[in-house]
Length: 147
Image 1 (cartoon, rainbow, N blue to C red):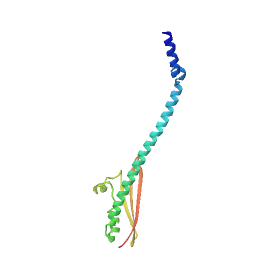
Image 2: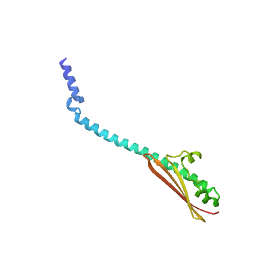
Image 3: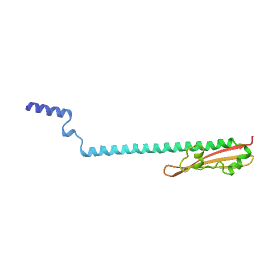
Image 4: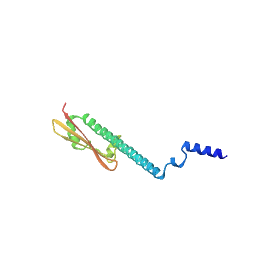
């Protein structure tokens, strides 16, 4: 029986099961702190990527809405463009955007302006609120000449 106990102790030491090869509490706390620090950095990176993705998606939607206005202006008789813009036909708020079958962004507003007479300088400005109530805008500008 004593021989078996001695054999077990020798094998335990060979496998590293004695107390000299174990981690101390300080080492475990330090390893845990490093792991938490690394994971918190990854979490921050992940959340920033989500915010950037949403910002890009919103910018793409705003660009699409501005291009839709530009296409409507392009398909309008040249002599009527200035009057329609000055009358606010293409100045849309969220309800106007929805009535045209589009999903508006938060507080989205589309304003159209024109200058010139022979060569029209047309600007479509799309504004909206992003996450955190940050105001964003997108300007589309073109020139049109009578055909």
